[in-house]
Length: 140
Image (tube, rainbow, N blue to C red; front, top):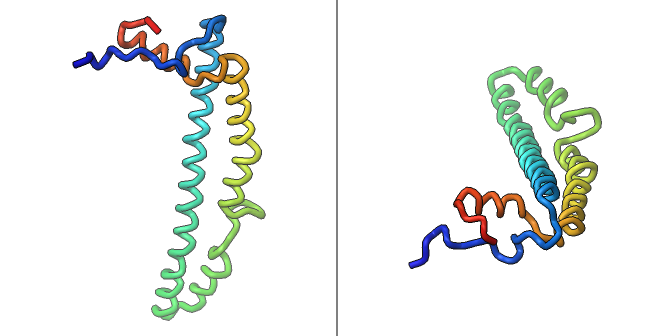
């Protein structure tokens, strides 16, 4: 049975000749920043879904207010909150779309281009080398 640590990086995660330590480190930092935007994007989707859920839950609140004899409050909730923009002119889906178009997609494309041009298209070199260092095996 092979040792669980006896699995060096595959070809796709080996540093191409001529790629410096500084380049690997810089691409690792770029990758880490992109991963952070992926998390931010996930939080935007959570914000979008939670806000939409809350908006639909207002239907029950409106119904209960009416049944409790508070039609004026039910009308007020409907008029002032149900379907309201979360920022001027935008529902949450528009915020997600704007983030994707204005920031996330350009960042993703730029990071891909940097890896393609600076590391021969090989992703996660920093992480692959870190894995080997953490295991005490710097062979590639």
